[in-house]
Length: 397
Image (tube, rainbow, N blue to C red; front, side, top):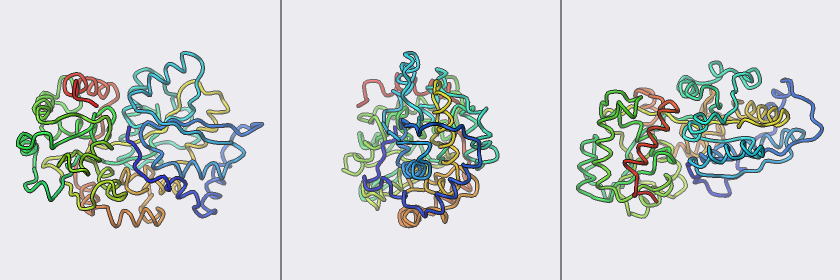
């Protein structure tokens, strides 16, 4: 789970967007056929990806524009590895009290393996067909979901190394130098458990491209170099935090000097003062971006009324003015998934944050570096399991 780092005052920060924007989005939704319901419903949302850091204002906007459809939203959070088991137990008991799941590719994959998610293909006439809506990079990632969910936020991610310039005088330029640095500076490098960390996951799935492994899409039979490298790196890493936030805090405190990061995890913590503003990043030689994103998923078992409202919410989230909110403070930079959404359309506060804490090199790299999609769901689950058993065992917290 990517723990949200924004300050509490941020909730509803964009809920006061110009009324014409909200009304325009509401008018667009009114054009679609919706069943007539006697009363508005309560929608229960679970977030296992920190997605509310990006979408909370959108839910607020929807509630304001559609009081006839939703009486209130409830929000809960959970670690991604717990999601599939939790939903499966509810479905088995016939007592499903989750209407919307906000998840990264980790929770999505685990649920796909168990057959927990509603197939959204029959409902694309409501919220739009992905190939018509989504940008090229987002569409490639959406294809991994096989319509078990709809992508609502997207980033090419990384991986990058982030370092303290006052403590790291010779910065590693490639994987060999990173391993050598780690051995020379034991316990000063850290990354989080991939099954619950976007940055850790991006590093894990980026290494096969960096190392020239036989088959970057096959973690069991094609990652010999990757598993050997991670095993060597393991010898000079003290432990693996359960999430990215913990690694950021250790970096900020001076306990660690180099961490694994992504574009969003570089920009957002510096903007919020959690990580020093002067922290630097570097892309290792030969890196291919590994894209990542967050999805809205509907668990199987909703009644007709709830499903219709959730689909209406999804359509609202994919409107351009709502998508522009996802630029946020760089949390999943860039963020929007819909074609034609630019930073100039984002709230001024987002524009100001990106201007101050973003890095021009990121946009240049997005245009010039290869971008690979994450592993397909079964392979991803297998990679996480192998990492947990062979690398992270006895070193987690």
